[in-house]
Length: 483
Image (cartoon, rainbow, N blue to C red; front, side, top):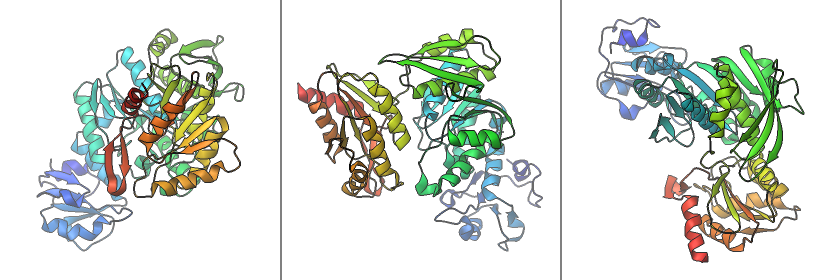
């Protein structure tokens, strides 16, 4: 593309007719006749290699301050933002050609986006999904390394989605993606806020910073669906100015636009009643997603579909066909008289929610196996333990993704939260051995919850070393050894 076409009139330059072969913010990817965008990160400032980038063949550099490079530099207020503009133009603005639904919050994003995609697909849409587990282009699975891909990769993915016939994109929008402006010029037709609980404070430092990061999504959307049962959601609903709709528990927030009242949760079904503001009759909904926390998630899904113009007569049958989400309260078959559930719960709030709900249909003992990630927020480790101790009858404390930390040191931080709890626990550092131990001690009527890994099929150790670790496979192998 010509430089002038990429800039789209934002900045004047005497090099406007130059052909550009590539755009990048990674100095390792500089090629002749490219644009290099100088971005300042936490550990590296791209401005420090701007002159070298020109020597390597870059046509022009995008900078935030005058580096004395004359016509070979374009000075912009925010180079991250400009990189998003350039990436959007490079791929022909696919973000302007599809309907976008964004979901943000600490917990619930994956379930909500997955169920929305399921329903819209049932209703005839071809849907692209961008999320934690994987990206999807209709039925095609696309690997992902980040919940929100990097800007160039994200726009390339949008283009693939559009070119394949997708009319809708449903997307988990992470706080990292928002703060780092990875989403570029994406504007969302509908945005959902689920909740905000302690997570990622190793990056954001404070809950206020974390909240402000999530809030950014609601400056770039047309309609908002907000969980006002969450304190941060209530605040967000009051602060934003776009068209907005509230959802929450009807017992506590009866004036919500979408008010749910849980009725029952069983091992294979959850039932609830949904009241819609301005509509005389309430809906009775039975679904295969398990747990009262999924009542809130499903209400958000329903609200999205209604705002898109779909009627109950097609939404509800499509919802009933949904069998759940991988790694979210997922039942792992055992063939035994006890149950094993795999869940991604890795925050205090999430682990409390999953255990509280599973406890409702546990006949005997609820056994929870969990750990905490290394190189991440240490303050949540004892809080995870306290949350687990509220509902579990037995705990098995083990490793998650220790990364560069000593697994035993992480466990010691966790155990601080169990002091005085009275809940019995075992420590088994190796997660594979811990799972085998859980299966060995389980008796008829027990439920084992494996918390923290969910959909992940790996563990991360020192120096970012990944090993294959799929809990479904680990359980199957350990069960063979029991026989």
